[in-house]
Image (cartoon, rainbow, N blue to C red; front, top):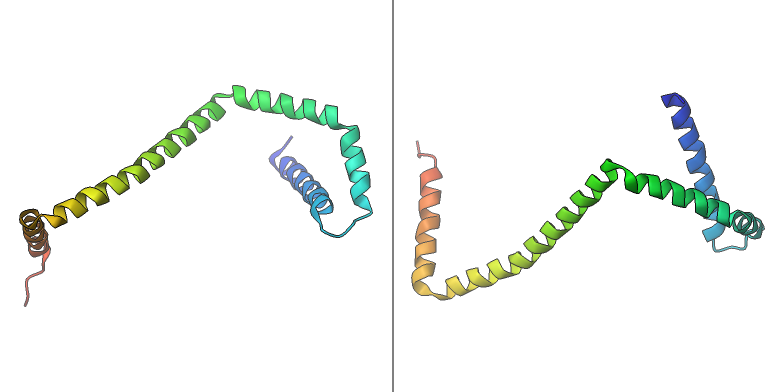
Length: 121
């Protein structure tokens, strides 16, 4: 199948999916809804077998395994950073309470600003 044929096939499939989705989810009582439900129910086992087969093939690919691992690592990292953020804020607040440390922080920030300040002409 050429790239163009695949794009056309994908577009047709997406259009059918969207149309069926609208019929099944619209609030008004479409006369097509019972027919679509009946057809889908009649093919339930066949559709289930196809989806199971496709999912099995997908899960077996290295790309899927890598994508899942990357997503998992990203989620774990995000969770750790979010939890750490609270700890950092708490520690910074404790440091601000100590007058000596607060003065040192002010001097350090002033030193950074002064070292990057442009000379006045």
